[in-house]
Each structure stands twice: as C-alpha cells, then as structure tokens.
Length: 130
Length: 130
DNA sequence: ATCTTTGCAAAACCTTTGCACTGCG
DNA sequence: CGCAGTGCAAAGGTTTTGCAAAGAT
Image (tube, rainbow over all chains, first blue to last red; front, side, top):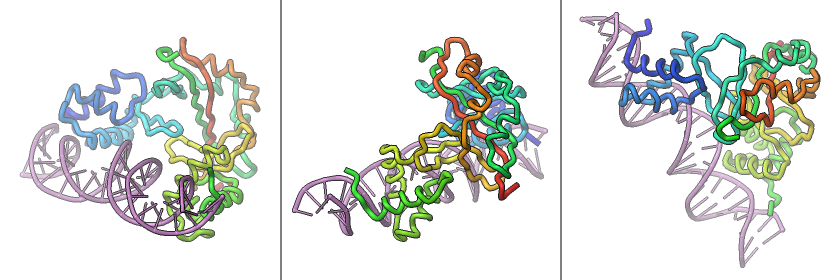
C-alpha cells in the first residue's frame, strides 16, 4: 500500500545516513539534496507513515518539538547538548546501569497509581561544545 | 515594579489552590472564576513574570506543551497518566531512592561529553483512571 | 486507468507582540 | 499623573489539511 516515490526514498535515505535525531525541518533540508522541490507537508506525511510502519521513532524531549530517528530496537535514552541543542543517542539506560529495578520507580508513585514506563533525559555539553 | 492587579492575584490564587501542574488554558479557565474577562495573553505574561520571580516553575514533559506549578524547592520529578494525560508531582527523585550517583549517569555519556543534569518522567495510570 | 502521493496554500494550534486603554501607585 | 498591566487582534512558528495535479502500479 505504501508506494515507492522519490520523496519517500529521499527521506528514508536521510535517516539511513544520520544517527542523530532530526526535526522535520532538518529532514526537509537534508532530503532536498535528493529531491530539491520537496515540500514540508510531504515530510510530515512521510514521518507519520514511516512511524506507523515502525521504521522511524519519535524522540520527544521536554520543551522541544519532536525529532525523529531510524527505529532502534534497543532500549535507550537521549542526551541533549545545552550549547548547540542537538540530541544524541545514549548506549543504554541509566536505570539498567545502576541496577534500578521497576520497584525503585514504583515506590515513588502515589498510592493507587500504576507505573507503566519511564523516560530519562541527560543534559550537558557535547564533544564539540565542551 | 510588579504591580498588584486583580488579574495577577487571580492567577496566583489558582496556583495556591492547585497542586497539579496546569497548562495556560487551564490557568485561564480557573482564574476566570475570579476575573471573568481575563484574557489568555495576560495569562502568558503573568506566567512569564511569575516564573522570572521564582514563584512558579515550568513543567516540560516530552511531547507536551508547557505546564506550570507553584515553585517547589524540593528536587522532584513528574508522573503523567496515560489515560487522562494529567501530570502529578512525585515526592522524590528515583535516582535518590535507588542511590543513583552522578557517576552512574556519567558513565553513559559519550566520550568527550560533559554531564550536567538529568530529567526523569514516569508514566502510567493515575488513581482515578486505574 | 486507478488511486495514492505530492505540492501549494489555507487552516489550526499555541504563543508572542503591537497598540490603545485601564487602572495601580 | 505617569507607566506598567490589560485586552484584543494580528502576527509568528509548527503541524495539519483540502484540493487539484502528478505519478506509481
């Protein structure tokens, strides 16, 4: 049902060539190297469709517009540079590393609440901005 | 320089009476019980000003528009209900509870990166939606 | 030939800003 | 009275949508 178009191919190629989460405008700019007349609406539609297919994942950080990255089955979190605002993948989950068990999180939830998931974001300076 | 107006008083009162983070529209609706003709622009300006004065804090969750709550000096994180989308304060930091040290987070940052801070958000179901 | 996808422009949200008016100090 | 604060409406930024034209199968 998903037709193969130059636009979709260009957008997928951008994700294949980039390991860092990108926002829609960045996707547009990179993909326009392959399809110059590409429009932003097509980018948004492709992001939604690629997301539905599980090929890309949404990276939502507090106070930031959504970014997107190639789907990565590993459980991982993100690091945002406070200088350049770029976002980078982390290799693992701090909870895992510290032997955090679900009970450790559960113990914080108010009585009667059910814990299902957690999100962790680290902040600091990336190598280039250090 | 901050003048005492009915509008500001109404907005502050909303925060004094609510423990849960509120978004600007919720603040408007609640404050309009005291000042019916209150406008949304005034809410945004008051939120900024109250934030600058340290009386309220911004609560940014991934993929959500900003919410605001009365400033709380305790280090704490938030819980979002996946059913009603409301946000609740947690009493402590999971990192503290689990004896997570800064080194545990630092060990995850890529070489050359500097870690400055972290954010943790828990997700699940609140008591009413359980 | 059919039916999805695209590009453009308009619309929908959320937030900010310009400006004349209100009202605090 | 002087100026900060307010309300409205317009403007900005991001994302979504309507629609006619282009293009994939």
